[in-house]
Image (cartoon, one colour):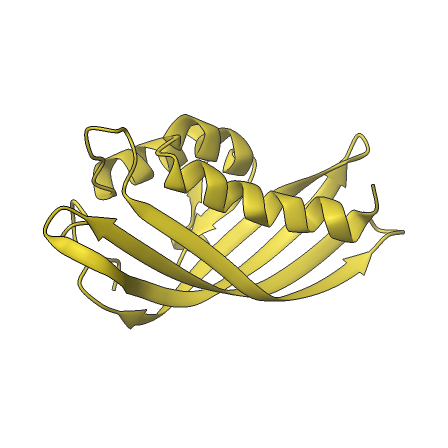
Length: 147
């Protein structure tokens, strides 16, 4: 499988895991990365910190999911095969439908990702999320969005 496909699959895997409510899986996927929306000093690092952040901010419903679908588009990849590094920029939109909230977009923004290849496998080394649009997140967030 070529690098572009592998990197695209990592981005898609995140959406699959978060929408299934698998915060342990998200933490495994991002556990080697720095994650957040702020400057480098405020990024979360480590599997436990990442899992805790998702568990403390994202509402789960009786089916174990947040009732969301993360749609990721407009992928721009820049890959340095020789160095074993890559960057990606993507747009994301979060849709949600739960009791009392009809299907609607609730958040939209961009991911700025960095990747590194280790032992022949690509992995996230950094994920920054930039929030551009906020709708009704009352049925999604357990705490306030980062400022």
